[in-house]
Amino acid sequence: MRRLQHLRPARGATKVSSRLGRGRGTGKGGTSGKGHKGQRARSSIQPWFEGGQMPIQRRMSHKGFNNARFARKFQIVNVESLDRFAADSVVTPDLMKDAGLVSSRFNPVKVLGRGELKRAITVCAHAFSSSAVEMIKSAGGSVEVLP
Image 1: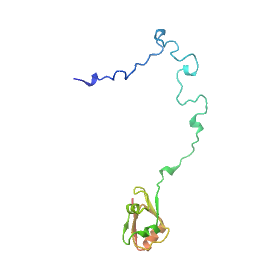
Image 2: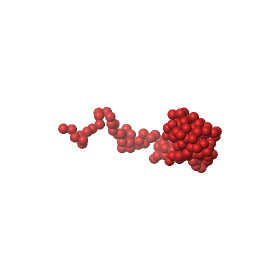
Image 3: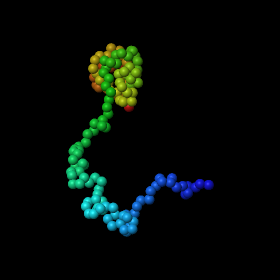
Image 4: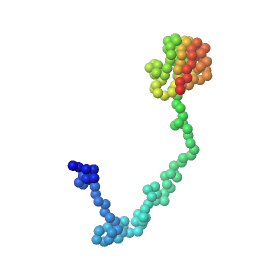
């Protein structure tokens, strides 16, 4: 019966590393395969050391912080484009996606107040401009802010 402690890597899968600096008879004695003197014959060079050239972390300028990648990006819908929906309907981001007003039903939607609205509809969106709220309510509709 095979046991866990008897498992071994396949033949040829592992290679025994040569031991450096263990006498002349090994073939890797003396300078241990590093040649004579010089920087690479010494103990170690840090991987980020560039031979005295100005290091990359000092060549690249990085100043300040920009919040743009964390900002909430809204999909914009104007009030004039909501006029295509039937009166007394509830307009949600899913309906806007089906109508082609927004590109994704997962990104937040903001309704802006450009144009006119002639029908009373209930608009559900993540954000509204004050002029959009005023236009929707003046047309007899209502506004619902989504979380």
